[in-house]
Image (tube, rainbow over all chains, first blue to last red; front, side):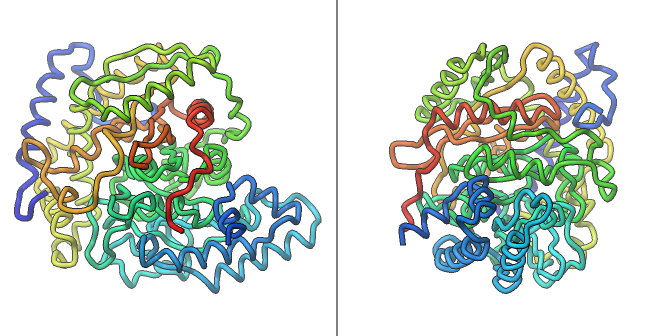
Length: 40
Length: 470
């Protein structure tokens, strides 16, 4: 990234859009906030 | 010195056999690894530390152990291996490629280091890497150069590891992977790199980047070598609560070349078209898998962009948590882009970290469902072969933001889901740069993943091809 650029704002905008889209999927709406990545 | 070069490139499993049979000595192989590392270092910049005296003493001890006989010999007896410079080595500097750790000398070995030593391996060096594995070269260490073309990047963050293995320096190596840091340099350097399942290999004594995404894994010249190293370093570890208490497989025995019954999904994302030569090599890899009995189906690659965004948010928060004290007290000691990332991570709200974890759980759910229909997922490891070193390394991502988001775009999804994924060479570009495919599988199915990689490796005919370093 270029010196002096703030990388956070664009990332959080995208993240919030992704999270909102999740609410449109009933099966995943209540996905836990944390899950072991290996499925344990 | 053709004989020496042949020994330098000896596969790890063949080196084990020759040492046991008395056809080679550890001293001989370790001397070759060290002399080759010293000779190539001005061109490659692949090492931070070479452990000449300690390694030669260990090699001579290994040769004495072999001569003494009596009882089973340890599985990697006498074989010279190196480590990315974030694996702690007792009494030897472990810098993580960072100025902040320049003088750091750990008192104890990492679990991986200790397991390799217990298996008889001779640790001879610590490899250059991107600063704290966070995507950037620190100017104190400088970039590693790709042995296939010194003007090109190795990728990262296991940059020195990729270059050293490709250049025939040592018989094996260990990297780490948080968004693709084993698989990208493996792909660009023409070697095999396995990111095992989350929890398969202990991370105790490994400098962390992002604790819920970090994975340790082998980087080697052949799939069989990768299997042999994984068998030694995998398994439960009381020093790492995330190291799974699951049986360690006989990964070498899994390399049967037989893929009958395997259901393979070729992952396709219209937004991620590979370069023509990469696509061609991927098609050839899939043809080899079909010929070995697999059924191949093209499938839309799920959640690639959403998963990358979630990964980046988690990475920002977890990395800044680890670095909080230093980023406040010694910000000038970081490379500028690393500093910018760490300062951004300090400002990432907790609710967004939780949003990212929620997205991660949803992505994990979809991949678990996908793996009820398929056994293996195949894609290129990246868009194309290694790019030239230079300004591109610091170029912003398309559309702005952090270029790391683009760098993890093909590989990070399997760090997010914790699934095992290997990069295996699949051919060469017309100008002699390595190409690679990525094969992922179900959690703890490293044997299946490596079996498929072995099929691709055999068909590609790349083992034994050496970079032009003479």
